[in-house]
Amino acid sequence: MTENLKPGDYVPGKGYYHLCAFPKCADPPFFGRKNQRYHPDCKKRIDAERLADKRKKTKDENKIMEQNLGILEDFYPSSLGTVEIPSKELGLKGFDFNASARRIKTEKYGYVCYVVHGLAFRYIQKHDTIIIYKKDELHRI
Image 1 (cartoon, rainbow, N blue to C red):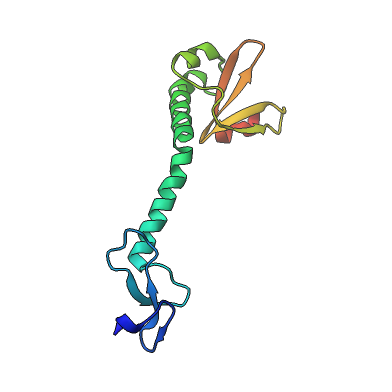
Image 2 (image 1 turned 45 degrees about the vertical axis):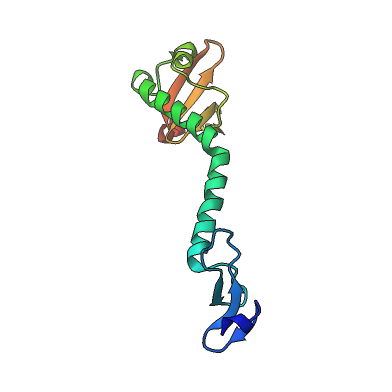
């Protein structure tokens, strides 16, 4: 019956006749909505491939941020939001000061801090040191 149909033909009770647009589809002919381009399973696969391609673009940057977060977590007990830590020590552990971080100004004193997930740090250029805070501690500085 499907040999006489052209893509876009309507068959009552089945829907519109289509050829799946997914290149790796095993069985291209199917019936579906008028604007449907893929089998439901093929649609899931193509969405997963698109999402994987999108993640590749940020993978390296996220890896650096994850490494920086780990280093900040290691040094936080030494700082506890009050003690200055030489930035050279963080650099020796592999901390990348040029990595992405959200820049914010504190409300109380107007310090510039950089937030990496749940932790934040403030660079003190005069001493070449940093102070590490938990993100929710920033209201006090």
